[in-house]
Length: 311
Image 1 (cartoon, helix red, strand yellow):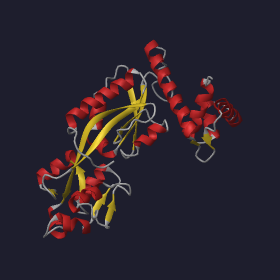
Image 2 (cartoon, helix red, strand yellow):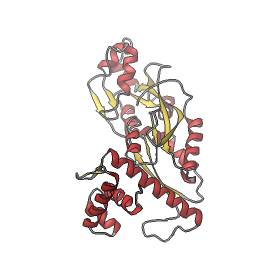
Image 3 (cartoon, helix red, strand yellow):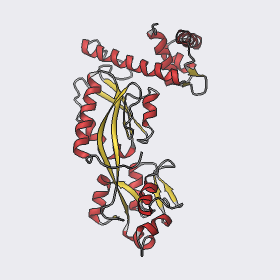
Image 4 (cartoon, helix red, strand yellow):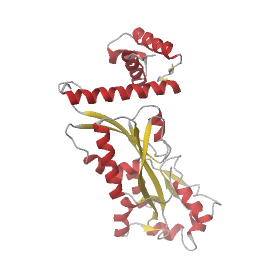
């Protein structure tokens, strides 16, 4: 059974645009034609591929076809570049640039990942679309076919992907000296931290709870007074402003520790987050170049493996 490319591209447009009307506009078709193409593809596969919600969402079978559609587009683009057939005059940007979608967690984006991207060869040029997502949930975007690669905490490869270890992102428990005097003295941190204000990234952030459990032997997590700050830089600044204590990436914490703005709550104790690079099983020069640049940067900027943390 063949999957006609025009039908596959129509399904991808519907998922990306969110509605049949928007997909029709992007493909220069009528909404009826889009609907008919998707029905024809569903008949060929014998499966429902889309949930007709707003926005449209792919079913589990639809995710497989969406991933295939993106891989097909990437291979087609690579072939055009190799053959010198790419058009540099498109209104929406240079077609001669390979386009890669990558999901990466906020802390990696704020510390080491951009350094890796600057090392990717730009002949031919590569354009990046970076999506920000928690490293424990980025595998979902790979599974849905929305991204080509991901920095993730999952060692289990998503179907159709390869995985390689990168290293460990190290987090240090820190706070301002004034905060320590007010909330954490006297007495051991294991007794004070469960009652002190804490900064967390969002409601899914369990790193601070995990750290406290290492001190209390699992009896309790971080305190109930929580400040939610959903950016890496904002998180660091909130801790530096004295709103609460928190676990800050060592690369961000180092200059503030040197300046005395922050102090380590338990010197020598930290949490390490294992990171992995997952990508499609796709042989394109641009994706291979990015993978090598990310691996090289991680060897320089992350810690050697051996530990666990936020995921």
